[in-house]
Image 1: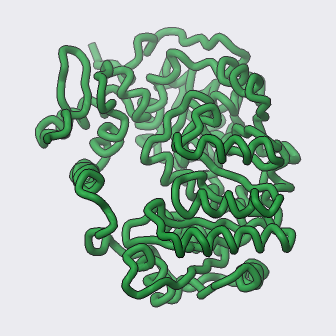
Image 2: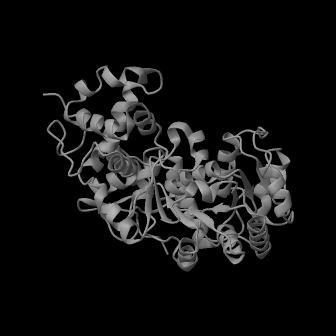
Image 3: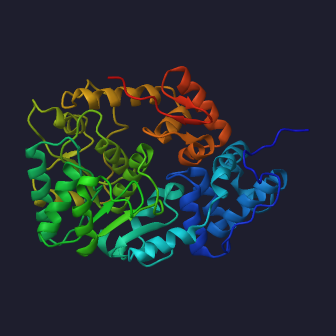
Length: 428
């Protein structure tokens, strides 16, 4: 007997979901849980069949893979999504079908006074269309649901978490100046430059948008909870492409950067070290042909090395105040110069020994490639989790998860506890 294609208890049998799969809003919400942010295969499938049709197809593919992959509505997908990639993707999504019910998350969103915004809604930011198949299926919004209005003419102000007083001052001043001139501010709600940018906008009495890596019910980081609540309650918005209850994993931080860049007319990097996540946002901005600016800093400051690299390589324009940022944002349609961001530079001297050790461990996991990197990111630190739970969190099939765990265990990066797994305790 042939080995089952998918690692799901219901594989090969009938898979029924407890909600109306044909409902466009429920289907879009379901896809935001089913697929990880930026899943190009899921994006192509939904673009071809629509969210309800794509979800129905996945259910058919789990029940009968041979029939699901034969011609029909997917005949035109051959040029962009190979059959093998579809098979891998269905195996990736299948573990999450077992508990899939977006009505739960929508009830949580309703209790928070939030809104689910879909691509066909008036409040959908127009710039997201430039992401093509990498665009989100839906946006979970806490605060103002009219994201089209909030982000029209907005500027992304981003930078390092380990920021300096200089960087925070510039970020706040630039953001306040943008608000005073009628522009909006978009950032990621993180510590450092992001928080300073949001505070500057709020202090100037204007709305600001924070794009989160986790669910809008999980205000992260904890130290910014009051700020994030002020954003949502003050005419701004907290936005996420993953539903309530979703944890802010590392890959989701990187994925949300494309949204920050796409909804904004321009992106400004205030401070960034060699390995700062803000450089990811900068790369997305140039890929989307959005103007990119960078604020110069002291040549002795490690937190400005990334900005200086962008300026030196011609990828960014030097900006120092709100007027120069607005001048940059008016240059829509000008193709930015430059290619991919460079590789990692020297070790960031701002990091303390504990943070440096954590980064080194994360780098070891990342060097092992996929799926080990995704599995390591999904492993709990303090408690242990069952294989199926790790699989769902990582967005991988059970087989891929087992393979990743095996590689991590060989390198001392995963520890088995009975039938469960966790990260090894930190050495002291």
